[in-house]
Length: 171
Image 1 (cartoon, one colour):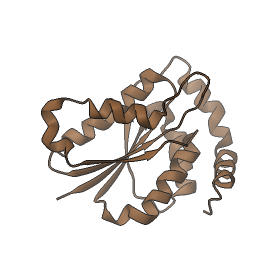
Image 2 (cartoon, one colour):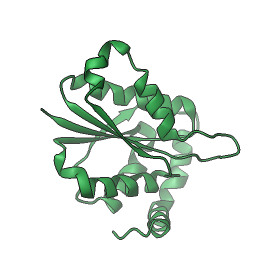
Image 3 (cartoon, helix red, strand yellow):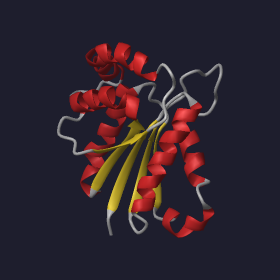
């Protein structure tokens, strides 16, 4: 039996988060007989506004996915990263998990948004340079998504260094 890991990156914009979830579910449909482990990565970015982590929101949405697929869902396991606050932290947590558990997977998919891919890929290359990831990109974006990515991509190395220090992570 194939064993698949889907790393689903969170987002604090609900519509984009749910578009990523939908995109990740299309991967699961492509492997109806596989063991699928979901690495749900995202914490609470604004505790004054929200009390549920992005990872918990993802789990709830995935769990409610089409009850007709109960047989397949019985082969779904969940790994929660409820503390990551940004993409660099997402990849540090995923890399930690993969260093211990990665050999069991036939394929590892990363799901994020198309507009976010370039920055996410740069961070992944810094944190997990030997990682063999397949990328699946959701199409939804906000009117200013690419504008903000152009700003944030300038800080990739500093963001990774800051996250590594926060979690005492050695690359």
